[in-house]
Length: 379
Image 1 (cartoon, one colour):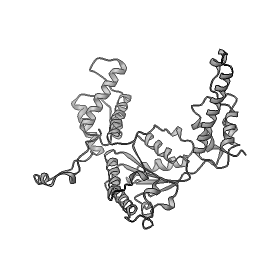
Image 2 (cartoon, rainbow, N blue to C red):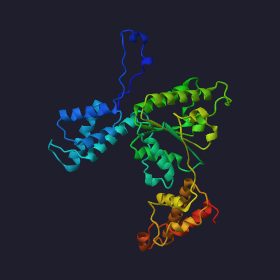
Image 3 (spheres, rainbow, N blue to C red):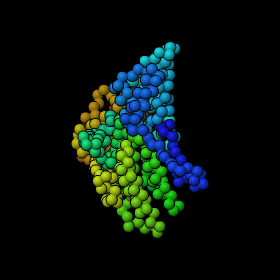
Image 4 (cartoon, rainbow, N blue to C red):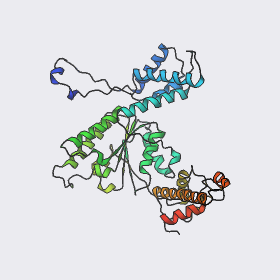
């Protein structure tokens, strides 16, 4: 666990609190304190690490405490001894041992707070959208005056890769990732929806550095005063969300909020002001040959393509405007066409062992053209 989850003070019995004159909340260690603590542990246990390695560890262990660092070193030593088959206690740790141990501890912590497991998405898996990538990465890096954006709203048509972008940012930046679907927080009981919003932000604070991703944000934060519910649940949820985002900014937490929606016109305007989701980035479809080619290469990097076929041959047959989801569906259908063709050929030559052993799943141009005719109107 990155840090011990504390029982909220309001849940303690008033009779018990009367026994104490003062109460002190122990929060997460700052970056400077973590570096001092790690150096003290290394010096005490006679572990040699250079300053560059120490700074790398500190950058990737936000929220760690004394117990976490001790566990980190024990796991790193155990992994190094098992990989190199060393039985001596004199071990020189490598960067790979440290980073593997950090991933193990973060994985245990992610499960403990109930965060969903997210597939590993690299930048290579996201075709195109270069301008959007640069905009998000520049927002995550603090400026010279330690100023950074608190959040970004990604908007655009369905299937353009908004959710995939959020996962790629979390993977590449080594951030914890909490993904929330808007309707998941709504509850039929009075006050429970607001409590769900508070719980999400409490999880994010305990998992810093963290990317908090709200998908379908328009269903969670619609414009106030226009809801038809008699209890005004939607308005109270929006107010609670605004309060939590303001508190997050004032506490200077390493929490970055990403929102995604298809209808930015339905979102409450107070959520889009500076200090909250202060930047709106349009994520559109592919409308030029280069971006279409990047997406196709990302989708077919695990395909076995026929040597006589090149992806450039497909670009001229695609529509002028196409989304990543549509290209994914086309590539999926092309692979299925190839599989059906190979299965049919093997069934007709069931006694031909040469066909059964030499035939491979090589996706051809005909497979793609057939899939394209099912998905689009050919140009």
